[in-house]
Length: 317
Image (tube, rainbow, N blue to C red; front, side, top):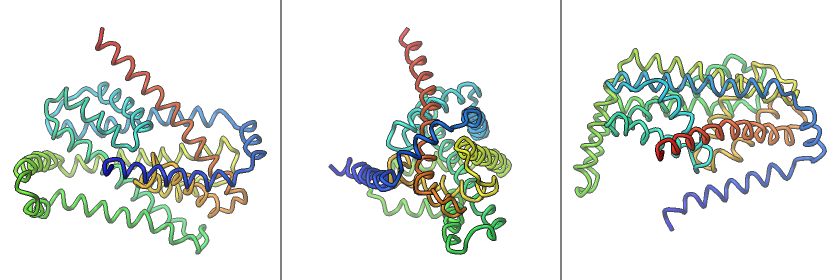
């Protein structure tokens, strides 16, 4: 029961949040938005998804190459795309990361090193996301009502926590000291795995990390453009700079492990965003924007599922 308790709690929170936000939607507004949707921003949204997958695969390859694991870019790209399918249909992004680790570990023969590359890959992405979410609000603070300023502190707090994690990994001493408090039965195996993991992270020199963070910053900018595309398809009158301020905050909210795949939390982020910029129909437009974002992401993830099916069939044959 303990194994499933966490997922049960997440499911309950997700249902409660979705019920709260979607009960406020007016059906007439839904029909109007559907009939008035512009298609070109949604096509651009899909193109951005593919482009960002290329950036993510390149970032992952930089880390693997630094650790001596030479995997072709094409294989990493396909693995990433298939992982997007598992990210969407698994309870959390861990499902997609687990696929990436398993897939590339088979090819590299070094599972712990592969885990290290995926972990640092994720960490650099989160650092870039929180950094963007810290800088843009400072630049546009005057355009945000004072009662919403506290919300803009969330990315900065997130950024500080991530820097602490990166510091602990680089210093290593505290992590090794904490191993002393583990049960003796498993301490030896865990210390051995930790040694391999930390040795692998030491291969990521500062120049490699800076390149990864640079790619992550570019990735985050295109995420902002993708959310802007959602707004354009709904004909929302919101400036692009406002998207730069609030999109990282929405990304942080939906990445919190409080609901299934960020559902509910994402809707809350859009409602908060639209309310802050003065959209009078934020209670309706926010959940609709989140739903449209999920629908487009589902379409993209579904193509990853087709790639996985093709790969499975080719292996059997």
